Length: 218
Image (cartoon, rainbow, N blue to C red):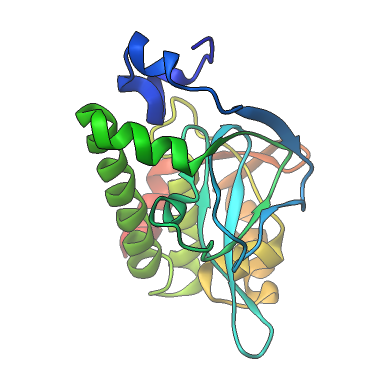
């Protein structure tokens, strides 16, 4: 009830009586960069929401290479598949130091059956996850490397008041875009030379939004 993000995450529509029914612990903890939140195939007993930081959702291909299917940021919910008592479908790995809240999927199932607001919010979260997956498939897996990198950069600052952006490793960016690490590095270096990325601190950049949009839409 005292969570600063409660009004913007899954439990926003709960009433006082609903909170009185919550007896299971809702844990809060921090992951170091590179740490797993869960692995694909793990029993999905919990759901998670992000308080700060960023995680990547990873699937591994038969040749051992990885593909990042999307990233998860503040107020996003992970582990929705556990609502159906399914195993987790991806590896969830912190890209930066990340703070998460963990809550039992059983609790959400029970509350959702009796609370129309929570049920609608769950459906909205499913739709958001589906829309994000569609966007990653259509925007970040098609076009030239320059277009893909530009689109990724624009997505990282979407809905923000500033164009400031913290990048990931070139290997991770390549896995997000379906291009090689070398291609990603060359494209980022080119964008720096052209002033499309201006480094203000180690690995922190200001983006030239208008010109990145022009590249993304060419």
